[in-house]
Length: 479
Ligand code: URA
Ligand code: SF4
Image (tube, rainbow, N blue to C red; front, side, top):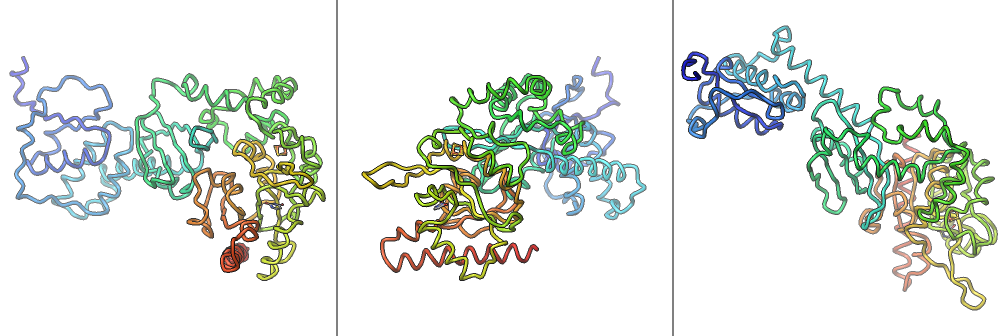
């Protein structure tokens, strides 16, 4: 029967869902002289009826002497339109490409049906990309390599490849992955390349998705019921996007049982230490100072004299984050009052910072030490302690809203810039993270004090002072 239909020789070409694949196939068709009415580019992701003519390999032998014309503008737009889910996009693009051969000004004719269809699709895809940039929410997870930011997102179109470079640039120093139903992408700050992989599968709707379950468990573990405020949540995020956020599924249950959950939370931290249940809803500095002594988020409160909250300008544009209070800070309850603090203050004096311009705090709020006779020897906090204490730091950031945060040393950098951050390589650079718009790291004043010789000490001090100077310049310029 098929042989009786020779007049209907429509050539069917299955196109995998990526622009380069279509481009190769379209170029071949153009070279063969196929007219748009004689060829059907089918979306290989859409179940299609059996074709009358298959694309056998000999049909794809191509004379090479003819040269196809493509403009940069067409390529730019076609690349975007290729991400659209409309199965007819490949045929539309081929029609345009074909017509472009005899009319190089075609794309300027906006009233043309094909051109206007392309522009409409382009705009829909671009809008979807913007939306993704605005609404992807990363969640911090710990795996064997440390912190890993993970996001799930369900875009309208196949935009992951187009949208991903934005995140690579913005969160260059963090380890992160984004999963969508069609594809996933991972970024490792050490490899510095976007790695695309398979999607989480459209058939596994977010609600049933295994990863969703993981998030739910995780979120119910760190979710702070005391801070639960649906109206604030709603004002931050239009309700129609709530479906994108896995924790939203939990909200009704959390609202219902907020009271009981507080106790459960406290229990839960034995398995996952976190200050989250102790951080008050209101992130004003006085509220944080009042609540902080009650923190049992990890074991460090047990041996320390007292908690040491941040101090300084309440709306300081510059926030300095150290590691943890030292011996003297622990006794006085104020940050940076010991030897390292004196050195830091000297560096700040040299660059003429006013006291209103800085807020000083630490990644961990309790002093960690080992007793050696009468002396208490500083001990570096573990990653789990830094992570446990992070909600306090984030709350202080939220209260002060600094323009730039400077991490002093590796511990603070681990808290805000991830475990793989290379301090000596990337110090002094203004970076972006999901926690704060602008973050920089530099050497810790204690590292200056510990330097083995005078020359080294001078050099490290200059690093510290110069990085602080460029940080100050940054915030003053932004003012
Ligand atoms: N070192 C820090 O990291 N923080 C302080 O508060 C004091 C010394
Ligand atoms: Fe809480 Fe931080 Fe102290 Fe641990 S170190 S008890 S998390 S304030």
